Amino acid sequence: MQERSSVADLVAVLRRELDRYSPGGKLPSSRALVDRFRVSPVTVSRALAQLAAEGLVVTRPGAGAFRARPRPSAVPVGDTSWQEVALSADGAADLVPRSVDASGVLVSLAAPPPGVVEFNGGYLHPSLQPERAMSAALARAGRRPGAWGRPPMEGLPELREWFARGIGGAVTAAEVLITAGGQSALATALRALAPPGAPVLVESPTYPGMLAIARAAGLRPVPVPVDADGVRPALLADAFRATGARVFVCQPLFQNPTGAVLAPERRGEVLRIARAAGAFVVEDDFVRRLVHEDAGPLPAPLAADDPDGVVVHVCSLTKATSPSFRVSALAAHGPVLERLRAIQVVDTFFVPRPLQEAALELVGSPAWPRHLRAVSAELRARRDAMTSALRLRLPELSPAHVPSGGYHLWPRLPEGADESALTAAALRAGVAITPGRPYFSAEPPAAHVRLSFAAVANTGEIAEGVRRLGTACREAWGG
Image 1 (tube, helix red, strand yellow):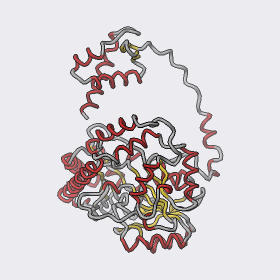
Image 2 (cartoon, rainbow, N blue to C red):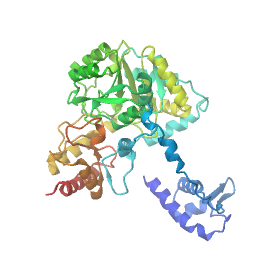
Image 3 (cartoon, rainbow, N blue to C red):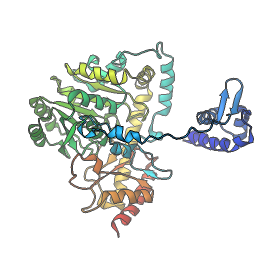
Image 4 (cartoon, rainbow, N blue to C red):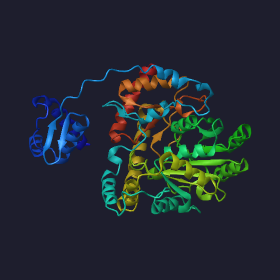
């Protein structure tokens, strides 16, 4: 974090000082900048690279950095109003919408302003990411023979084998495709399994990014309620009968946002119901590697207990590493695998080989199990800190269910509370939270908010965030 701050500070100083030099004039050497600002050569290199990217500086290997010459006068802005007609013509008849509503996804992807406590984040804070191990893995990967060549379309065999072992059961490497993140894998699965206009059954509430994928593909999400033990099988069977759907998307382990784990007695029932309906179950196993220290043994993925090819399984390394480490797996059994493969090849060709090689280096290193143990302990501490702070300061927001995995809590708001008003008041108070409405594909039964404890710096920041949330509650609800 300090390095990033130093880079930003140095860029700001050098940007202000550029007027001292005429266009084409040479800036001080890197060594002189290191000595003057007492920063590392890496910081100087990154600062100059950023200025070069902004078009303010030109770097010449062996010669140094120079102030860039002025850009030509800006070209007059054209008239793009014609696009309104072209983009909207006959839109009502589109089976697959040409415009996509990304608002539910952007809520958790958008970085809050500086100084705001980030209770809306969906990824690990940089202090929890294995940055050193990932950097070392990437460096080693770049030295592997053929690392910059074209990989097999399905992914590196060794990486497919590693994912297959993690899924378990009878899943083999031949039934695994390497994909560029869980979002991409889910998009491929839904396109492969349901035609535009078809219904797709989803848990209610569920991950807004999946709802966005479904709607962007022209599908109709149909909600099936979730309780503390996961999806309710009787309602799932009713939904299949009522809609004729051929796909059900679920998160059986630490469901987002409720944190529910599908109960043992429901696992087989869900598979039997789907099989009887001639339907697929898309299993999004997104946070298996973010289990908390006190969780105990985890249930196997549904795919491990599925010899009939009902389950299409998605799992990823991203949540346990970094938002930019987008390596995931899509596993399926039977003829559907070829359809999944064809769609992925057409959409993305393949996941870049250096990233796949880096994933192999990372998960095969001693640093990987150490990282998972450290994250497991830290997430438990953060969960407990947030739960305790809410019970002490905001008992009305104490969650009914405290999960033993994942990275967030799902409090229900008091009767009549306006979650939009609370979200806006929270931001004014200096804490970003996620409203619950985007997690429901139909009318929600009650107002909720999602509070993440993974994207903050430490437990002290959690305490401060809850204090600020208390200020927001008083503003939004009075008292």
